[in-house]
Amino acid sequence: MTAAGDSHELDRLRETAQVRLEKAVGDGRLTLEEYSEQAAVVWSRDADLARLRQLVPVDTPPPPVSRPQSTLIGIFGDTRRSGRWSLAVKTLALLLFGDVKLDLRSAVIGARTSTITLVTLFGDSTITVPEGVHVEVGGFDLFGDRELDAGAQDPGPGAPAIRVVSYSLFGDLRVRTR
Image 1 (cartoon, rainbow, N blue to C red):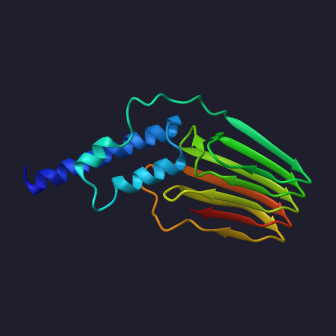
Image 2: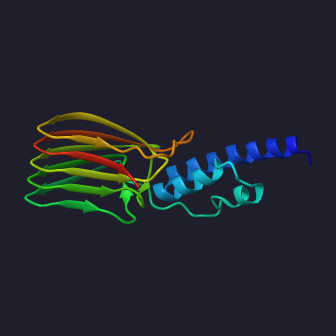
Image 3: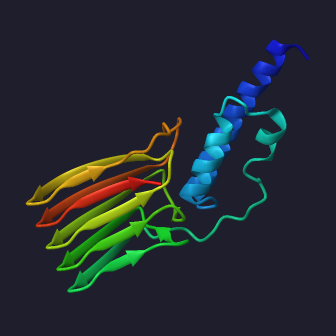
């Protein structure tokens, strides 16, 4: 095959692999971190045909569907989620005198966009996301700081999106990419 033919096949395989990745993360078969790692391989300059054909096994069964909404409530205590867990399409966290820490790197999502709404009084919020995920931050803080570290990797086309809406009184919001 010619170099141009290889290039066209590589582009076609990249697009096919990206579509499969998007479907797999949307179906909950890949965590956000697994999606991020595989998307980086798809769009890397040194991607090869054999490696692209191996990404996202088609025969992986889909996990249970995420709930459409989840509520976390904490009073005088912290709330933490990490490891492999299912992120609802909409998550509401209400905290009074406590911190919330959500690690989304191993989370399984059930939609291309998930919204996390944080309402905190006298507490800090920290959300950790993997590289290659779109992150949007909104809301209002009174006597608090906001910090968004979106990472160095540009989210590819069709990357999952995490929308963080924070309403805070005397608390900080940190969204970090690791």
